[in-house]
Image (cartoon, rainbow, N blue to C red; front, side, top):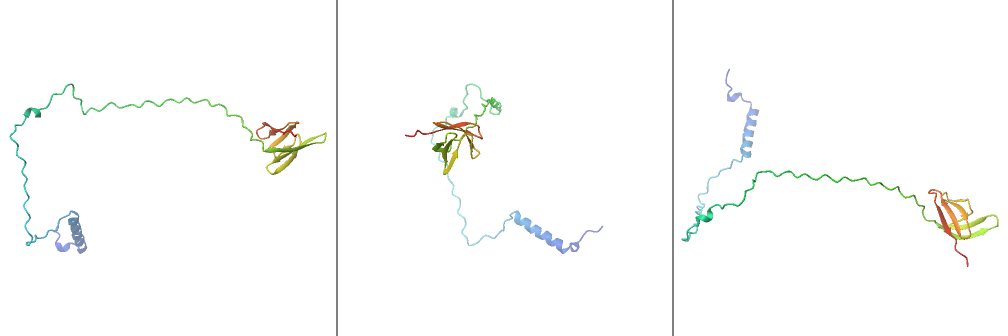
Length: 173
């Protein structure tokens, strides 16, 4: 086998090797060196600072000795016992009371007057701006039925809820 010579390396591969070498030197942060300027003044020597001289007082070596502790020294490397959270309180399901029976809305009628021909009584009612003339047993708008008419009241049954409601007839002077 023969050893490869420099001329056997393809020019493209040589260019890649040179580019990678240049990039590696830039990435590693090799500093660009420049020659120092001979005209520049020499740097000033650092100023030394002396520690203050001790005053002639003797050092109390007993104050530097470790003091004896009373009692035991706690071990700093012992892990504390894990804190166990108390179990959550058990909720007792409250026995729900049955919902109250549905309540019909207030009567939307206002008494206007009555007519009695001897056989049948008819009352005149106002609902908003609509007037109704009804007798006992008739329904008003698929919501209310007139159950009975007396001298002082008109009794209605709400058809959806089945509850009875009373409209008081005002006394005439």
